[in-house]
Image (cartoon, rainbow, N blue to C red):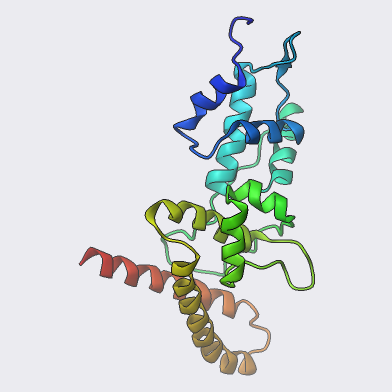
Length: 222
């Protein structure tokens, strides 16, 4: 083997501690999608240079911590290959600071079921359970999933090691549905008086989210 090149098994072992969900099949999938291009030895085995491993790290980090779909990751890597800076990415988790204005909408994403499974790291059975519980569903009238569905899928995967599954997350769904009713009850009269204030539901939602998080923290700290 050439100096500095690693086998796919060595690459997986190197990344496993930081990204426990990485598998040989996932690395091969990312190669098939054109995100990495390892060398091939005369025997046909893949050989990964340090640059390949750094690209893999970027892809895995973008999926794990920023919930980016593969198309966005691919576009970012293409920018890097052309000498352009990769756009900054931030996690979708709400920041722990009360908002002073409505949060601008993020760019819409459209994912197939396969995209959702690969980006979130969920198993097919885990996604099916979330769908049965009404926690994840394709966008109305389509077969595609969006950013919110991806966020729920990633959070469900991260909660699984703590023994929390779709049954437990239904409690979160029920709480969210009650909060939606509360928000609608509060903003509907306001919107009737000020029909141009379209940002109000988003502002109230953010405030309710922060109140919810604060109440959780208070109760957990006692």
